[in-house]
Length: 501
Picture (cartoon, rainbow, N blue to C red):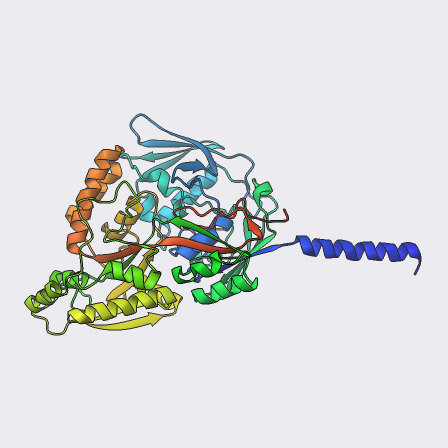
């Protein structure tokens, strides 16, 4: 071999080595396995984290919960607030190379409104017509004003998928095609989801990694040990009991945000539901009075979360000030049980078998049994638990809702008749009337008054017992730069880069 040939081979090996070193993968630890990779049918918080990398939305929020552009660059209402005009970003393509335009927006909204399996129908039901004005302008027409619409478009209802790829729900969920910074590569159930950087992304300069690997690791202690060892770059939902381990380690960084989320004890109140709570509102009240939310927060979360009795967090202007969190009253709970005529009421709590929910379930079990309940616990693997939840096959379920900037996607979704998360059969014509009125009201003070009424109704009926609002805690290697966690708790990959970049 000549000297020149040797130099050529050496240069080739160096190029390969440098390419390998520069091809970096962001490894993210998730607590749960997402249910589906179709924004129309997805219903999990962990799925929303993956969707941020996979599917751009029409709009987004910033750290102050203000609406900001994404695929739509500008928007305006008509004088009667019944038509929303969106100006779309030019030069955007889906991962299959097809252009993003007004026709694609129309196809996406109509798909989410009509798809049998869609969880977005109620969110988009106020839209009666989608008019394509020109390739980069679309008008969403409503019969009546709908105050939450902009907020709705910052979540899955605003995620745009390729219409040509979304012809079969099952096939699309197995191979999603969106317009985000990363495109789908592979998925191994209950193990990992792999994405690779989309070279045609409109904002490619702000995307710092060549690939993302989302690893499903239910145990928060294991997620912590993996970032400590360098096997993960980022881990979501770090347990409050593990925060000091990150704060004291110079190789790690902690990212936090007070959240919009709520954890609540969802109660099946269907007429056909089995169990003593369905038709005994006094027992639902007894169960609430048996619980000490502050103690749950202190014992389970080192007091790092916010104990509360409402679905809307205290940080929101729509949190009710007239319905403070009740104190624990075991004697009153026992009296309600006695008056109900049910001797030794037995209840069953279903939950996803995570360390956090398991700890909360055990504390609830202990407290409620002191008041006279017999409490059985049913921990299930995440996908099995979600399957039962979606089927309404539970007596009580520890639900974890990631929350939204606007109260409607929480309150109407869970408590409105026909709401997409109304899986416990609750229906109140009076509450429906108030929630629908709040949807039409664009004045903030008037909406606050309506949500005060709504709080009074659902807190009295108790279709669920809110427990606490989590604070979002993400741990990361210090070598990962550009992480910002907003109140929605989503890891946004735009701007996240290795320190060397």
